[in-house]
Length: 96
Image (cartoon, rainbow, N blue to C red):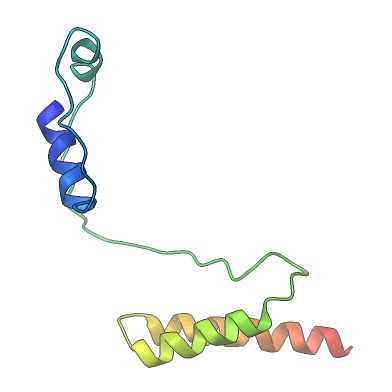
């Protein structure tokens, strides 16, 4: 487990200078209670929150939608469309 934690910190934070996790009298028993798993992602589903009700985040959301259109990654156009749809609903509600 100590080796797995050391590999993770080096892989995801390579610029940091962490010492190896010690498998000593203090950490050893605790580390041996943990389990390392490797997961294979079969499907992903994301949920986006575009802001709390009443918050004035229109410009930020519009910038996000524009950036998603520019990036044009998988699902970006659909996410941008939802953000723009939500903005239109809020604008319509504000004028009534």
